[in-house]
Length: 77
Image (cartoon, rainbow, N blue to C red; front, side):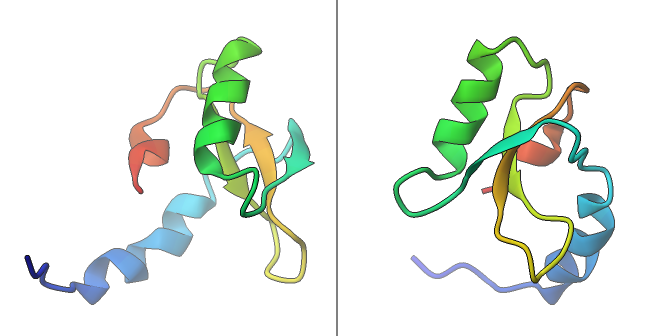
């Protein structure tokens, strides 16, 4: 099945990333610790916004950042 590529989503992505809080970041994200482990770990710790692998800069490795505010931003795969 082919999915049409729409560059509009990519153009909007950096603006959405500004909403991420980096206050509660810990584990380094990798091939062995990916977004789904981060998401569930933050939920288990009680964070309402779950977790997202993110970095405030392209020069810094992505870490699991637990979010205190619920959002559907983190449901984009």
